[in-house]
Length: 438
Ligand SMILES: Cc1ncc(COP(=O)(O)O)c(C=O)c1O
Image 1 (cartoon, rainbow, N blue to C red):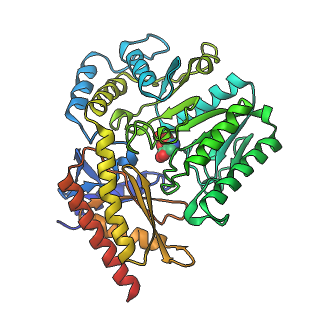
Image 2: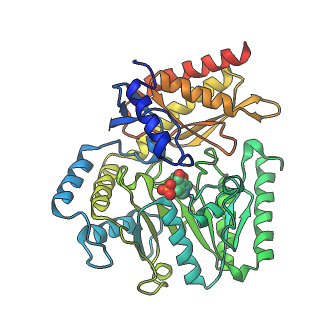
Image 3: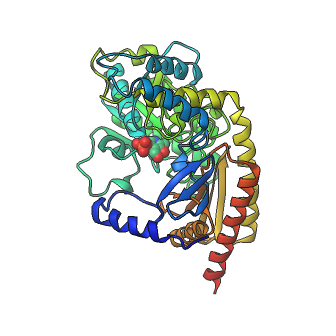
């Protein structure tokens, strides 16, 4: 490998620092030139294995040839018409496809927008309109986006300094078992469910429009809730006429080994928000849900100029064909099992690895400076990720304490690529552990 970052990346970084706002998040000091499957090539010609998938947006594999072909064909016909002015076929075909594959057997409808945050915003708008109620409940440690409403729904730490935040948003505890101070799994679940019921009572059950939950918390550090918790929340919502919104933006499209993460818990949401991997990297998101709920909003109440852009719809239709054809659930489970096995072995070997957890191909290890106190180790996590990058693997961190190293690579990754990447990651971990000890 040439130097990382190489000279061209360093040049571009100077341009970035001069002209791009500091607040725009960026994890690595390397500029990408091209991508293919699970391989990334930077502007200096260095190659990396992709364990981050552009934050979980590339389940089908980067630049999948069928997706590129579908985009090319669509680009030759039409880039934009605005669905609100003149509708076009790819939008309605994709809406039908999304209604077919999302959980729930009843009549469903969909609306298309551009980003994950927009999907969450619209799901909340629809829920409020359909119920005539103002309040929304999200969970501690959740991540739902960076617009003002979605930031308010997101865990407290990220919203500091951006206030005033959106009103009528309430937060309830989520069972983060590794860090629970509430006792055993059963005790933690019972306490979290109690807290939720109390919150609903305090806000007023007839004032709560919806609860929004990630089936597995993504940015929060891959926290998998016990089924009893998800089912308990869903039952409580159902009894009180509160809509259940599943934020499947990171968990959707086979990431967890099922089409959608919520399917692991036998819960059928009223509304589902999807984005990220739906269009292999093109900006597209959707709200899909019960027709009676979706149709509560009158004509003109929903929309945006570029929502359901024709190129993105063409890409998404191709992605869904690929994922449905290729038994991606089984592939995600196999990838997850392989990664989990390695992470567990490292947990046994390295003190730094405090916890290992995940669902399907959504696997993470949480790094701590001390296993007893569970003191988060964000610097060590950054060092592991930086070391891995230098050796040719791109990773993205997660967790409220920024101490979680996660696998979120394309599901198209081969076993050889996966094993090679895991070897690099283990060496990075060993190097950082050796430095910590010395
Ligand atoms: C669960 C979840 N919801 C919402 C979002 C926001 O999506 P976007 O960044 O496309 O706005 C994300 C992004 O990481 C996410 O993981």
